[in-house]
Length: 311
Image 1 (tube, one colour):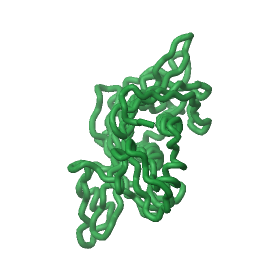
Image 2 (cartoon, one colour):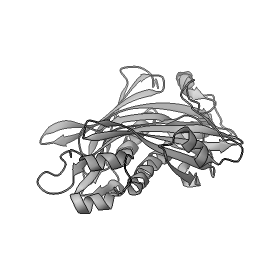
Image 3 (cartoon, one colour):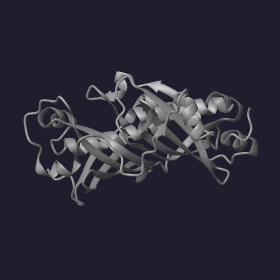
Image 4 (cartoon, one colour):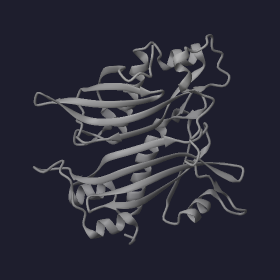
C-alpha cells in the first residue's frame, strides 16, 4: 500500500470527455487536466485507497493542490490514453499520458501533481489511517511560506479597486463558489480553478476584442495551451465570492504569451490569496491543410493581448 516509493507505478486507460471537444475534434487543456486528476485517483484506487474509503474510513479528503502540465501534442476526442502514474516522494506524482499514433506510443501530456489528504472536520471516521499515509495528511490546505500574497482592503475600497490598485494591468472578474465547485460539503476543489482559468481567459480575450468566435471567423485561429500550472494556496469555501485577476505578463517571441491568474476571498479587511495559476498560450490554425500548426502573431494582436492598445 506504499504510495511514496520511486518504483511504484500505476497504469490506467482513459478517454477524454465529449464536453471537451469544442473546436474540430481537439480536446482542450481543461479536460486534459481532468484526465491527470483521474489518473492520480486511479493510482489511489489501485491501492484500495479511493477517495470514498479515505473519507468514510479515515476522515480524509483527497485534494490535488498543485498540478502542472506540459501538452506537447494535440489530443483528439476518440483517443484512448495510456496513463502512467509514478509516486516519487510523499504526495508527489509524475503522470504521463500516451496515445497510439501510427503504431507508436506518443506522449501527449506530461504532468506533476501534489496531493494532500485533508483532515475533514465533522467526519466521523472509523479507523486510524495507515502509517504510510502520514506524510500526506494535513490539517488544511496551506501554501508554503512566501507563496501567498494577501491584499489589504483599505477603508472605503472594495475588492476590485484594491486588487487593481496593487496591479493596475489586471483584468478583474468574480464568481460565487457554488456547491458544484466544492468537495466534501465545503471546500472549493482544484477543478473549479481549472474552469475559472478557462473562463477568465475567455473573458479577457473578449474584453481585448479578440473573442474566440471573432478569430475563428476572421482568421481561422484557435487558442492552444502548451503549459499550465494551478496551485491551491488556502481554502475557499462554499458560497464565498472568489475575486479573480488575470494578467498577461510576458511574450514568448511572437508565438505565445505567458499569463497569470490569482484568486482571492475577502475575510474582514483582507483579501486572502487562495489560488494562483500560470498559463502559456498561443494560437493554432483551425482549418485547412495547415490545421494544428502554430500561428506567428502580428503586431496588432500582440498589442491587444498585452493591453498596449484598446480595440
